[in-house]
Image (cartoon, rainbow, N blue to C red):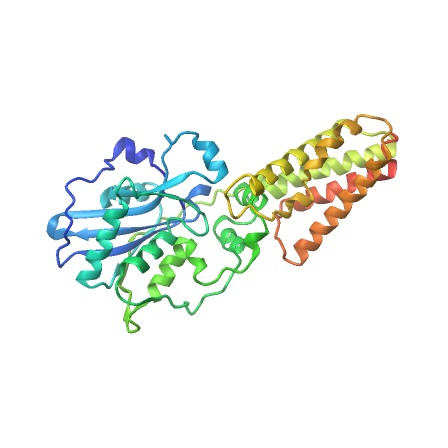
Length: 389
């Protein structure tokens, strides 16, 4: 969804727009551009932008939101903490068009039905917003992104009474369902998202909140009205249509397949240990280390960042940080009494996770299913032997 600081623009195409007039001619048009999803995860949600097309003065530029500056000090740390500021972008429409044509992404245009005064006011708002002291903002994936900014600017800058109506074919969904619609269910991108984002995104999004996705900006703008009688969009068109492309999804390398194979190996080793009366300590150390580290990362995302969507993450029911404290006991032939209680606690946690999933408190990545089964099997095995092997 984020319009990156495109290398293609910076190397091949001029990004700066010079000699921009402040006054629009009567024939100027302002439209909303909607770009379809791309092949990569960060492009999977599409993009929105404003186009200012004034042929009378030779101006055709695009304003967008969601660009970021790689030269920002501590870029990756700020990104992880949710403190990275994004910024407004401005490009010639020809550059914008050529970029998305190059990457084979559909571009749709909705020309807004605005009066001359409204066009001038919206344009002035964009000019002011693009000033260096105004163009940066704290990005939020769900509530303040390249799509929601288009909606918010329109509501702020348009003089008339702008009303968004719910499209006839609209079906309310949770935030996670809306993400899955764009990313799919069984790929590493959606798997990572489902691990990192908590139960706060498993509530139903209001129709208005659906507009965090560019395609819903297009849908809601298409049905919106001005002053109760006029339509917001006077003309819609497809500027560029994506050509057919082959799907790159391979089930053999999907999370469900890879974790299914690894989980089968865990269950096989556990069965073999049971039959032979031994215990593969390396496997237990590996499982407790990985689940503990993943749990620590989830806690940091929840409590040590400004990301709103990483809160209340019940993936901690299987990726438990305290597992790291048990590693020392895993190397001993006999363990202290509290370890047995701790193993019972881990099994209960996994049962609670299943309850949360069934009750839709939080929806988890489907690739986790075989791993969760393997963890239950291994924990029960350890509980039965109490590390006496």
